[in-house]
Each structure stands twice: as C-alpha cells, then as structure tokens.
Length: 448
Image 1 (spheres, rainbow, N blue to C red):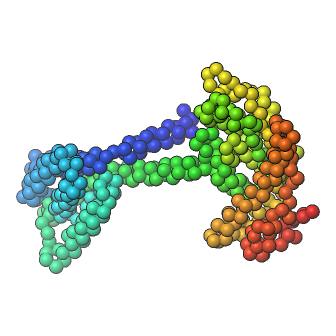
Image 2 (image 1 turned 135 degrees about the horizontal axis):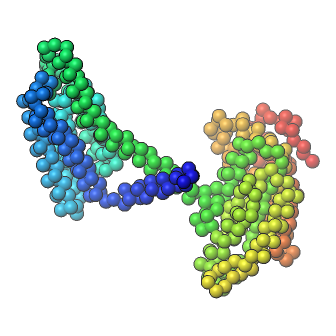
C-alpha cells in the first residue's frame, strides 16, 4: 500500500471519527465522561487492593491506615458516579437539572482527585496528569463549567503544595522513615512503578485525545478551505480558488514566459437545461469540467468561472501555445458526446477566448510581492490589486470570447498580449505607494 493511499485512508477514518463525535448528543458526551471517571478510579482501586493483599511486602513503603481510607473513598466515588451516570437519560429533558447533574459529577471528581493527590503525593507526576484531565473535559462538557472547576482544582493543588510549610505535613501514603539504604532504594523503586501505573495510562489517553483534537482542527481547516476554493458541482476550483492559486504561482514561483488565460463558454447551454432539465445540465457541467481537467497540461489550473463558463490559467505559456491548447480542447469536446441521462448523449461545443500577460509584467509583480511580504497591510492591498489585475487579463479573454460567439461559436479567438500599460491604473502595479522603491527600468519592463 502506497504512502498516499495510507494517508487517504487515515484521513477518511479521522474524518469519520470526528463526524461521529460531532453527532453525539450532550447526554452521550456526559455519559462518556462519567465512564472515564469510573475507569480511572478503577485503576486506582485495583492498585490499592493489590497493595493491601501484598501488605506484608509493602508495609515498609505504604501507610496501611491511609491506604484503607483511600480505598473506601475510591469505592464510594465509583459507586456515586455509577449512580449519577445511570440517571442521565432520565434527566435529559430538563436543562437546568442536567447542568446541575454535570456539576455534581465534576465536583465529586475534584473532591476524590484532590484527596488522591494529597495522599499519593502532590509532588508526583501523577498529580500533574490528573490536573491535565481538564483537556478531556473540554471536549465532553460545557466549557464554562469545566473552566470554573479547573480554576478550583488549581487553587486546591496550590494549597496542597504550600500549606504544609505553615501547618505541618499532610497525611501521606508514603512512608518516609527507613532503617537502612536498601529499604530506601526498594521504596523508591516501588513508588516509581506505582506512579507509572497510576499516571502513564492517563497521560497516554490525554495525548491521544489532544492528537485527535488537533487532527479535527486540521481536518476542519482543510474542509473549510476546500469549500471556499472549490466548486461543489464540478469538483474543480471556483473563481476565488483559481485566483488564489494563480497568485501563488505568479508571485512565489520563478516564471520564464508569459502567463496565458483561456476563457471557455459552453454554446447553447441553456437549451440543455430547458430540454433535459437542470440535473442533466449539472451532469454535463461536471463531465465537461473533468474532460478539460484531464486534457490540460499538469502545470495548468482550471476553475469554474461562473455559470457555464470555465477559466484555464497556463503559467509559462505563450499566446501561440495557449491557442494550440484551446483548439485541442475545442476539438476534443466537439468529438465526444456528453451523456446527460441513460438514453441521451449530446455533442456539446464551446467558444474560447485567449489572453496573455506579458512576462515583464509578471517579473515586475514578483518583485513587488517580494517587497511587501513582511508588511501585512501592504500585502493585503497587494492581494486585492492582484485580483484586479487578473480581472483586466480575463476581461481581454472575455472580449475575445465575445468575438468567437459573434462569429458563429465553436471557435477560438485571441486577444492581444497584456503589457504593463494596461495595468498602470492599478496602485500596486502602476505608480502606487507599493512600488515607490522600484521603477520600470529596475523591473526590466519593455512597455510598447
């Protein structure tokens, strides 16, 4: 299995898991939180039972009295959370009771964990792991509730750390007086293993949860960006996405030749909608988009410009080369009937308008972009005016497209190459403040 395929499967599983979590109701999340509390307390309970059964081996390291007290408290906590969790479906319709129910569960948890930290040792890494459990709570419970109780937990932890300096030592499970160094080393080894058992599983669970959370943020970020830059119907870029990738291509890459644009409009497309219906029209748009995408060179970018219009951007492509590509697109589309339903296929034609941006303009734009990279405000202005520049070139292609329509459709027309003088009305690319350090001679412009 290739790496890209594994990555696709991993992303799909992540997105499915995230959709499942998003679909959970509040009661499902609170119920899960209660179960996690029970599982955590059960690990503590099993450790305490094990130590009690082996007390003859561990009596020099562990205070048996406080261990029994903690075991009783842990048992009561497990039973209480079990009962509270069982009542969640019954109080689901009552909003206020449901909020109070969450508060009760969390207060019970904080009370138990505070006692556990006190006896196990607030200077151990187990206590830090317990505090970090707020990360899981943020995913499952109302954030305002979790935040307030987290602050309470922090105050309690600080108090447990500082109060012994004024009021004397707190009770502790750990025995601190030993007859010799051998017993001291055995005690250290015992508590290190205990801390690993009590803290490591929870730490791994928290890391796993945070990882899932970050995966979710990344997935949603990619999804939002995809929806913003891609056309849902044709699965190719929309106008915004096409302009953005063109900006990156012209401003962040080294370009050696002109950049050409091909504006495409399907001939008599309205008749397809009128005769076969809008679903057939949508199907045709999708198939035409995929046909163009497969025929165009790998370096080309194509997007749906609007309605039945498509725009192809060809970096490092002269007007003559773009003309040949446009003729190839026209011929392939005319020769391949498009299926609109199970019984009908239509031979669709298109009209094409070609326009090109001269390489000197592109070089000048690249230099301006390098100047404004570190200045956020100027960069925003540059991006806006770059879009205006693209519209100038596309308008040239649109004029050529209009000529193709006027002369009978199903043909390609070419507009003159756009030189710098066509862009001088734009601030960033003419005499505006963004390019004061640059002049036409430095940029190497050849203005006719």
